Length: 112
Length: 115
Image (cartoon, rainbow over all chains, first blue to last red; front, side, top):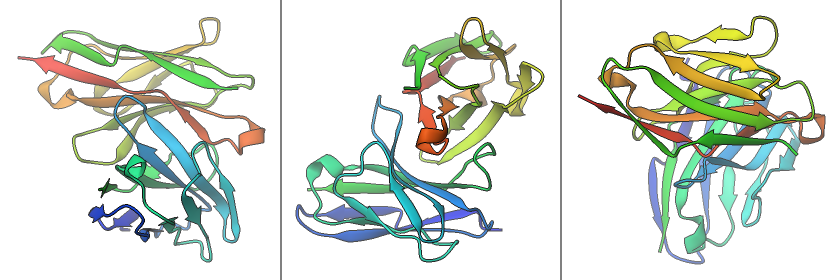
């Protein structure tokens, strides 16, 4: 089991560029989430999915899109990068709503 | 709305001393409570969780936490700190059905171990 994998590990973008952060899990988990982590603010939920084809917005969804075409993959798209999106992004998955959430290693994004 | 408060963004203890990290929550539904640890430049991993049953929960690396409903608290403790415990610790509570039980996170407490 690779668990939750994320690519890339580090990315530098210019303002206005778009990109996709990849997330995959091999544990057959229904529930997947994207978070951003900023100093002193803990984790903030961007988008989440409760199964293939079903996504919903979290606390800070503006500027981000997601889709869930398979159980395994949950990519996060930045439509037009802004310096305010400089952050560390974590993908997570869990089997049920009360079970352990497993995190990927994170993607560090710098927007210039 | 649910919320989580972690008292102290930084906590410093000497090696061998008691570790106490505080977490208070507000929840309109019976809570599920979690503590996660994040080592530098890594993702988060579960330390322990409370769902139902015994209110004193034991986790990995000698940590434990006690759910106190009357105080709406879930403080994390370890009797004797080790240098390897230096990390950031996050408390989280599950939201209710209106948020699909998504986790609400505290801001984190950075634990510093003095030799």
